[in-house]
Every structure is written in structure tokens, then in C-alpha cells.
Length: 90
Image (cartoon, rainbow, N blue to C red; front, side, top):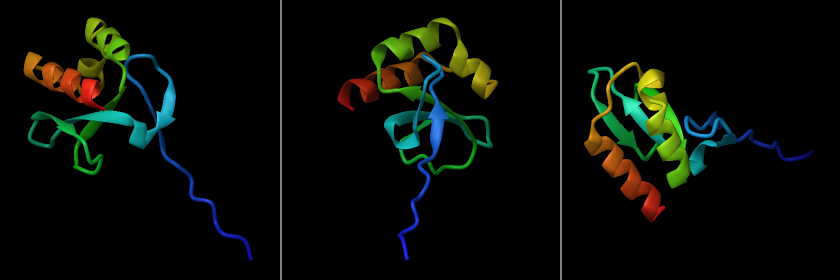
């Protein structure tokens, strides 16, 4: 009997449009209350958008307002600053 192979979930980066394993991306989340937060666990409830851990992808996504359109909400500069810090550290 062979071991079952688990499928690794993939998500699309809002910056470059590439598909990557979910655990390699940073999730930006709009909570049911409408708050925008970073979800580093990937398990919080709400609408999520994903971004590569690449400063270039974040710049592309920010310039084209891709995270805002994915989440249907404005994103503050504070969230972008936290995203930049997370990408620089990770």
C-alpha cells in the first residue's frame, strides 16, 4: 500500500501573477469586520490576497492597487510598511 501524497495548496501572487505554494506567500486579510491585517498563519477567517516575499512584487502590487481591488477595500500605508518589514525579514 502506498502513502497518499497530499496536495500542496497554491495561491496566486497579486504582484507578479505567479502561482506558488501557499506557505511561501504573505496573506493580507480583510476581516469580516472590514479591518485589513496581515495573516501570517494563513488561517484567519476573511477575504485574503497573497503576495510573494519579494520587494519587487510588493511594489508592482502597490503601484497597480492590486491588493485593494482583490480585497475590495483601501489599504493604509501602515499595512504596506508592515508588509515591507515582513518581506525584508522573511
